[in-house]
Image (cartoon, rainbow, N blue to C red; front, side, top):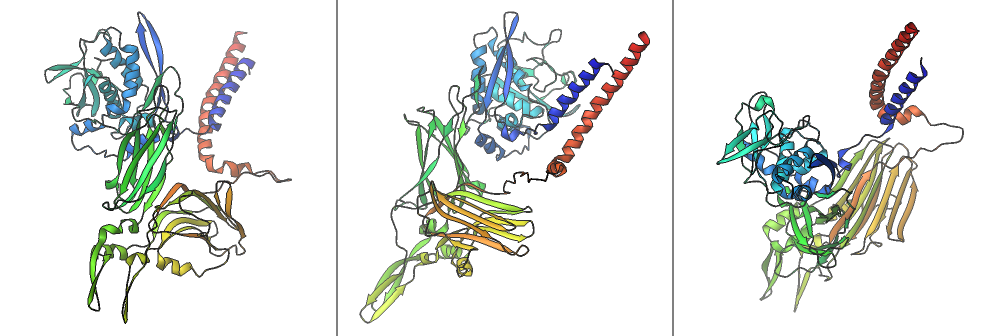
Length: 603
């Protein structure tokens, strides 16, 4: 084989092999797409890079919204101008002083949207399409319409319900007839409410400009949807900057319990934090999501003070588990950021005041009044049992359970005990329902058999505790003596086939460190860490997770790792990509061989 062709073949194979060994990229870790658009300065087009960043909390918010469409007018709810306001402003910084600036701006938006790959999907909000970097005609049209409307253009949606398939693009009202559309073709427009709206095709593949229209839709009258009912307020924005990447920012989050006002029902906490870099008058969004019922999900916005601090007082009025997270949009060339996510459990005891009634007791000849539980409260109390925060099962060689947690207690210590009333020659004990509500937090690891494990984090009541409180030995640890209120702790515990490891520490202070061998390699084994806390406190988790522990490859002297075992989880992907390599390499070899024969004949 000619050496020149051999080098070419090696180069192609090496590139393909490089692609093969690179890990696949997932959109979930890429919230910072970069786009390019061109603006002419005279006859010369100048390129501009637009760097964007989407806070994960914003993407998660829109994923949980209603995506159903029962009529064409329902598509207007997916148009979210406030979310992409920064993108529109940055594009307008380039186009604002250009001739026909509204058309130039619209065409720049189309050029950006054309860079998002087409992929058939259901209707999505623009934040979802940007993060996932894919969308079909409606998803791409909704992104373009949102940006153009954020730039104060008058925009509508065009929906073509018939031939050849249903389709969507947008209509843009301009101050003039388009001048940058494809030459030789009359710009397409449709009238709505006495205005001309020029078509703007958003799917990629052709350099569509405002006024262009795919040939198969030129003779079809579209259904026109106005955007009067589009979203007018959003929890956050996509960050963007021109020319240079966005600089990372940060936002913190903390929770502090506040003494409940006597007139309030529920449990009150102060949500606070700060942003870096420090900016005043910045909007911070606080998401509070109820895990058991989305009806209680809310988001609120607050502004930072001159030190970059923010705060909000929130009153929980429903039992259950909540997640709390704060988010900042960023400013200037700084990207937006999300705080860590905190999980808060609001127990029944925090809310029992709203079920209290006043009962009268006869003691001798005197009437004594005391608080008691209403029938509704008693019914709830009787059904109040084990609360699961986390429960996972694994078919692996072990499981690692880890979390940071804090028990938030009120500064006032309210006594919870029965009322003893003594009258001469008679003593009466009036029971208190709160006495039943001792709370216990349990972290449990369980080996159910060979390569079968489970992990859970639960709240237990007295009846659950009575079943395990008599246990002793290394499989049960009472950590109540180590845990104080209003202090963050870090717990890591691991179970494998022959070992249990548990560590509980507070910053640099280690409170608990145990390593327990398991002698029975075939039987069931449980390991529990239990701690008691005041029933009027809130339990808050940060980074609560159960996962498979890392298994680093260790080279033992005299033994080599089995490469097939290392590749086994990815063998299907590797075989597929190897087939692609062969499909490319074999034709190159054949062509090279034919070329060599041809050269031989010529000589």
